[in-house]
Image (cartoon, rainbow, N blue to C red; front, top):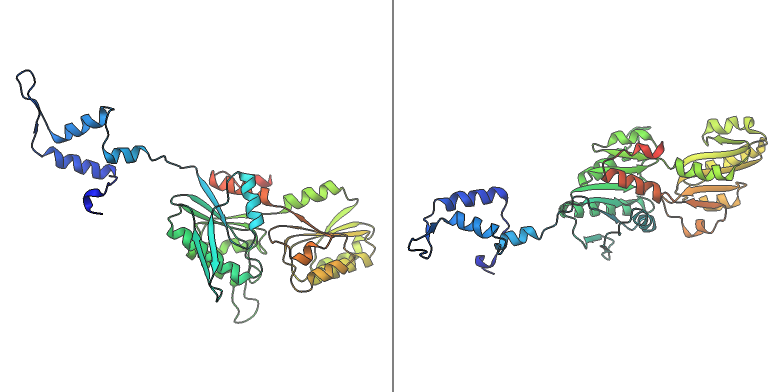
Length: 351
């Protein structure tokens, strides 16, 4: 295609420069009317034609057909928890963005956006759960693609923040991985982060971008309120909580934690409470990591019920355990996404 076949859309500054240039060009002679020749310059001729309402130049036609979309936002997800992303999209009434995620034979990730995101407010849902490294690299690659596609703003939505437990130097010559992940997310292109029940709240300080920290407690509290358990007492699963178990005799106990990993501490706490006379023991946690022997331990324990959220998808063997109950936080995340997009307060979700 040669230069004559290309139609350019001029910016306001370029149009002013064009008008200044054409004003110095010679006048155009028009046909004689009533015996007097009529003249006009090129700039006036262009204005008359544009304002006549009957004909527009090619650049004007292209501009008038463009509809601004300042309110639009898009939601994308990776492979770690697509069902949660689909629930969020259903809640907010936005279709899940189309992407292509593939892997080479050596495991290398290849990601492509299949729709335009230029100038859009984008939310990328990806908990970095097992396999943590794979899902983290996948998240970084997706953000790089969004940044290079000129997304207006990228908010990384991480229902589960992997590597959060290594948040300080508790031994010589160790890494602070929660800080490292924060730096990686920012470098990859994140403009904002939406996180759920961090292992330590001070991890927010590792970010140099705005962070919205959500709590799953409204979802969990609502569930246990409906159960109307008698003499309910909340218990910490740490060592101090186990030592105080003797004070919970004759009561229904609820063990509250943010993460359940191998389940060892949970089962020991249940046994200690029941040994001191507790009637029943329930447990709840936001993130069901459930690695190693966790599922077997929970299934064989005297725990009445373990209530978790869907920040992490359950393993198949965990989903078959009847005493494990899963609650959805899609509505909580959906309302937070709407608040961030509309620039309203997120903290009102917890009032």
